[in-house]
Length: 211
Image (cartoon, rainbow, N blue to C red; front, side, top):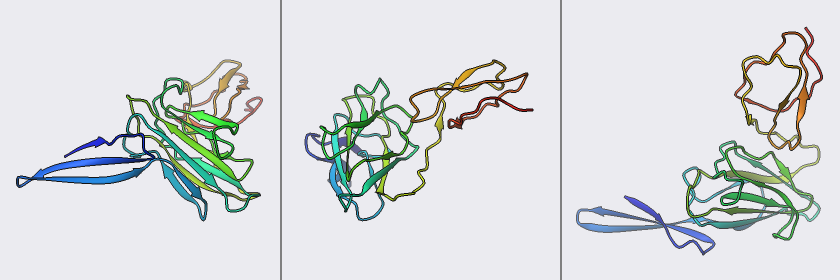
């Protein structure tokens, strides 16, 4: 059983399967949505084509998400299972725009294996653009979208550190990274206090340890 991509210049990607059984050739054709205009009626999900398996090459998909009311905002959350080719986001990436087209301000361009932090639009529309080149596909991404409610708590995804911490840290300063945080926070230690190794963590600012 073989699966291969149909020509990808159409908004919908067609995947074709061929099977030989009892001297008969069977052809299966099914669609994998690539881009859409979405009017939010309730919280829902969109995914890159083929997710959670590898996305096809040479894709350009755009989803325009609109809230029901012009005064409402949109909240999107990426699934932690996020996997796009990581070469400075030049070839495979997902980009989020703060509006309904590519002329709107960008809210981020993402790739690699670290899922973006939750994103909230300033208006009633968001554009999600996904691009892949001709090689090195990953698993892609899944996004939950919903109307943002005032006072709603936003859950941030815990993601791996760019550089794992050693078992203990005895220096007087360092840097801890948090997903979605463009700056850096310094930490200070006193005496032999240290930080145990953690697989995932998020930034928690502090000034010193107390014994």
